[in-house]
Length: 95
Picture (tube, rainbow, N blue to C red):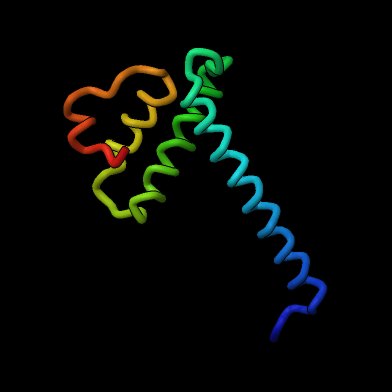
């Protein structure tokens, strides 16, 4: 049984809102990474959230292929903390 048209419409607008929020989060992460010295996370919770988002976007960029989750996290951590990537991270980095 199909949901009523009104429910489908609200589901569609919810997906649109989620996509806009996702895009906003992506811009925030990339802007934070680009200006790491001016946009430091205010606390550890915010830092971990930014790292998680950046790692997610790295995984998304490579099609969520398994086996590189730690590389994604470590690269995102370096990106958010404004630290240069280590040699082994550069060897496995997509950026």
